[in-house]
Image (cartoon, rainbow, N blue to C red; front, top):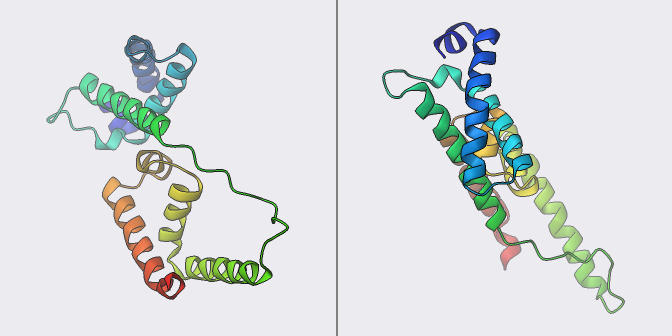
Length: 172
């Protein structure tokens, strides 16, 4: 692991992968995950190990504990995502009895939301879009971007606060 962390050694990573991948898959399958899903999670976990290798500290944990913790956290993320309620279907067609005034108001509000989003910093906008439109968990965003979890949470929170402030007139 130290060669992976310090020198980004691909051969060492291949040995790590060969050793831990079947063990992680077994752990996931023993917890009830289907084989195909477990294989996908193993790929995600080992990719995270490669990207987060610099964060590994042998003084704080053993390699196995660190890797299994990444796997367990990913498993928890998947379980949480599976428990999310499905969004209600959105009507794509305008009902015949729709009031044209409501349609105009809706279009204006959508335009104001788009304008407010464009005034956010690119970092805040990107993370809000990933979280709310891309339906990604904070952990998935962290894996994709490599940003620290605290940075992700604070950028989303600050971006949402700014959107609330910018759109406060719409609520009345």
